[in-house]
Length: 165
Image 1 (cartoon, one colour):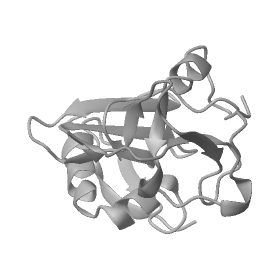
Image 2: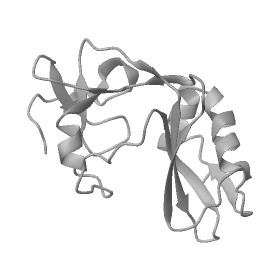
Image 3: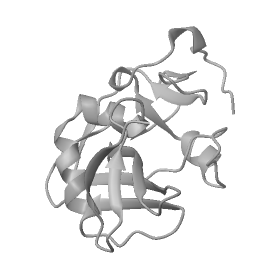
Image 4: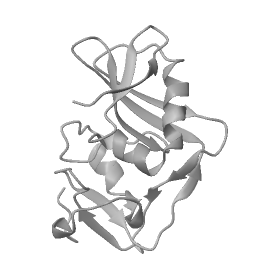
């Protein structure tokens, strides 16, 4: 696996990212300025536990959140994002919103260091239904929220109007 060392956490754990094939790496490719923000946050956090999700308000607009609340007037469809096998919910004809928040997911490795596996501009959100991290909030949240369609690469052959969850 390719490891790009970002920094050390406040408690001395290496924090790294796979810039080539991870979900976080794909986000950083599209928004390279987020790498410096991940570093800024990581150096201030004491990381412990197998998985850590951090939502940080940066106090300034850092980008656009692509998750929006939906209603009955919205045109919704489902599809699998690029290189994923879980379906996401998408909305057409909606726009991203400026956000001051950054969310980062850190996963502990066998050497007690942490890989940044996911990061996005915006508040923390429950995992998608059907994912291995699905929780009790996932289905209810994703029935009323969606990703803005033009912000992510999807697998066209997986598009459906029928909810897979």
